[in-house]
Length: 247
Image (cartoon, rainbow, N blue to C red; front, side):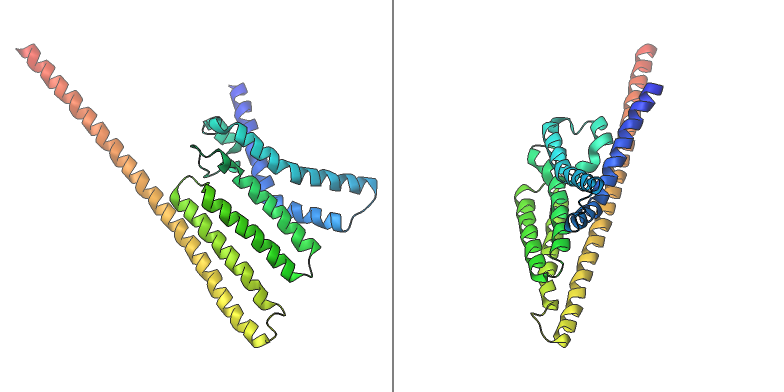
């Protein structure tokens, strides 16, 4: 019993560590970019910077290679318990390349952090580079459709399109539009599009919850119907046997 507990505990701990790493990856990437920009040549600081750089650059590649090699085993409960945060809602049937989705997202955060830190005073470059990344991600999502169902793929594509459009609109708040009044008007329209995106995502969440509830109700009704059919079959067999014994 203790061995089973230790086995499950290790897997849950690894899953928690991976989840924390994914959530904090952007903060770590920004810290790395700041450390590289303001490089401290002292050995201890340099070693820490190199170690963090190696971790952030190599780990997404390791995740992708491991998931790609273990693709056929990812549906097992033990693998889900340990690594599901790396391939949550990813298609598990016939789309081996779909497991690269998380790693691509991590590298995108790393590039975003480097762009924000190293090109802090160059808005045009930041926007242009982010647009290139968004365009590549749109192409990836459209061609691969890595999510496990059509609705999730559609949500991902629409959200990426909103991000692409809103990123392009940031240029409207630069010196490309000299009038402060025009920038104010554009800002109002920008907030409307942001609100539309928020409402869309809330509607998608509500829709997924409703679909899941309907699925659970249908499964419960089917299970109840199956039990009733089984009880009727057993009662019918009992009646037939009683009639046979009476005859």
